[in-house]
Length: 452
Image (cartoon, rainbow, N blue to C red):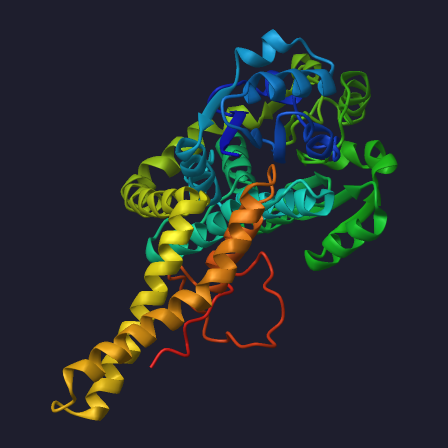
């Protein structure tokens, strides 16, 4: 059975934050598991502040996109027409290239930022845990991590790396001019908050308060940056002394509301406050921006800073896309090999090649005067042994191919066992090495180290 690969998504380029937060999946961890049913055989969901993307594999020729959109809109309780008008779709090699581009941070709002790769790995781990990542998604994601590693090591795309948090602090500097002596609060204590804390300190901020639902995590982060940890319920007690608030929680609803900020402003005697909301769904009620002496920016307002970053990195991005295109072509060969016939052809060719190389070595040992009849007999023997050795594996694959949906796993396994795709062998490859983690490069497990 042949399959199509589909990528359906919306991001900061195609949908405003008001749309992204309506269709965010960050608080719906079972989405991929509930999607894999009927025409969808594999799935993975990625949901970040700037993008929500669904990777789905299904039977060729079926309406996978329609199935995904209906399920996605239903889970979020939103009209499917609103979703359809905001999404982009990629199919087969277009989907492969897009995943490679996302993993390499070439499609990020801040090109070259490192967070997206970690977020993609988290999404893949979730798909593994739910059993929705199988032959194609497994291979595609491992290859995506390998491509990202190549891009970061072979280009300067990550030099002077910046992030959304960096852009947020740069925006604060544009508003206030000078941040030294000011006090900041981070609402949320995840990776975004950690990066923001470092950038705030680099900008000369006087003190940082970390507010989080889990106090232990707030304490951990505050200790690193010599700040003050508080529970998120204590936030409003500390806001009157705070000038800059950067919020990045995973809350599905607003955690900072206009009526509460109004009271804070009264206690501050209306001194200005600067809020940056880099969460999706947003943490800060948009009505906060209607209050006097309040400056509220969400993640879409960071575009000016981001465009400067893009202009600086355009040349490196072009080099990186060359790598992405080459790896996409390589993945196309692997996809084509999942049909049985190319694998049988490659197995037979490998066997014949091995037989002829061993034959050549044997004839060199026998010398140039070897009788021609003996040469032909040895050649027949070598080729016959190779054919017989591959006969049973090929029969096994043919039997599996007759079972609905049962062949791809074994075809992929055979290609790895016999290294039919000439995978690069890691230096530490050996029989008893530990299973590779998804943090490694391409997940190759075959070895040709015995070649002489």
